[in-house]
Length: 593
Image (tube, rainbow, N blue to C red; front, side, top):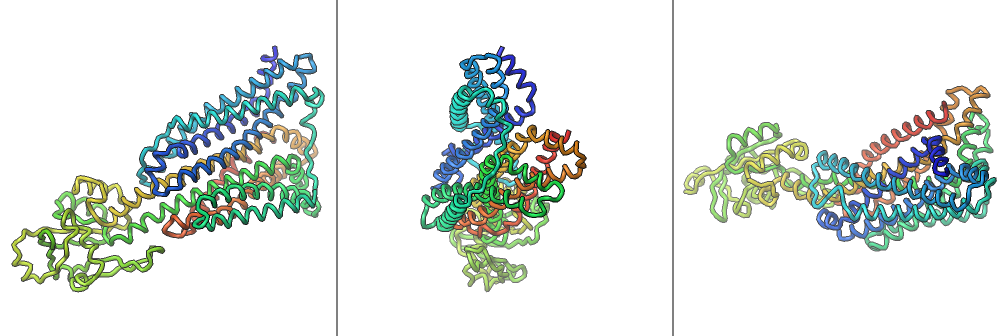
């Protein structure tokens, strides 16, 4: 009988259960996506030269576990709030507490285990999709990466099932020890904010000091090493929560005292935000951290991606050099519409390569002269034969040779002296495209055809350097972009879950406003403002965290981590705005029926 009553309650509130299930599925899916990288030691070792990366991922796992604890705690409280009234009614009609306890336990476990298993499957599918998009669009080279990784699935299942076992026990003890009448009216008791100036001042001071310590440790990671990451993890998380808990409560109460709070529905909007203030502070702290993690990871990933062509460009002025190129290979070069192309004739011994000086006088050979290796700035120098013979950069010409000739010494002869050499004449064809990455597919095909390999050790030029640098940074680039997308999805899940979970309870308030003559435009405006506050506050804190957090990557990035920062910020802002528009659209459909 109790099971039938429970199923009836489930059918009646299917929309709320859908919000709960979707939130838990996304949470476990994102946790699995992170663990698929964090627990795959072969992937981490083969795709990055940074020895600390494994420990960094362990710190990340700790942070994500903390976020998951709060998230599941909130999801469980949402599940509990939906069932309090039902279980109170069961008690009033004479149901035994032991039976109700069993029902609570089974329902909590069923929700948790089902959502976790589905979440792992969704996480695997997302891992496949996201990884393929990144690999194909960015031209990444990865080793030992797999979408399904059993240790990650086991870690996710153990964590979530363990947490729901604890949540089920908590629910059992709470509901069976709470009087039936209190359960029936529990949702009618508002959580009104109360200002406690002394306590809030202490929280603000401690929060600011904690965040300052975290920022300092990230900026001095070269000195603190791994300990700096641990310090930043603890202090920034603690400081973020304390600041939200102190300032947000004060802000809501203080704003009501201003005259603009009496205009239109501003007072109603502030009251809506104040109604569940304590829950908002916890969730907004999580969202701020996820915002910082997502934006920071994407910014770093794009930073590594942008420095790959820069590092390739300082190696050589030409994409590739072909010795005795065939007619078909010349056609492949022409199809790429190169900016420059030149052919130099030469004769070679084992230790010396002889060129015609007149050809270099007609077609000067361009070399790269680096001004500042840290900033990747350089000059291009056009050399005739005389300059190239004396230049320290003439090794760039020999890079474009193949085989033993790459280590030979170049000598430039007059036409008469060159003609007297007995060695057979050969041709070196060099060319430059407008962008190595744009033509990487065509260059790869040409390298396979001419050198019978795509190993960069077998040929020189910008494309060879691109392959080497891309192989070195692909893992870091992939990790940054992959985790950024994952954290962004979890951020959206947290915000949408928090906002939509209260939509059903808010519905009757908007009905009352509608009955007293409030226009639809005013209602839409109130919704827009309320949800905008919940998006803007963690966004501001997250951006500040990112701007200071990028200091960590100065020690592993050749270029400044702030180079081109506007692009990932702009992309992220667009995605964040999209989530906001989706959230208010769904929320309106629920509360404005």
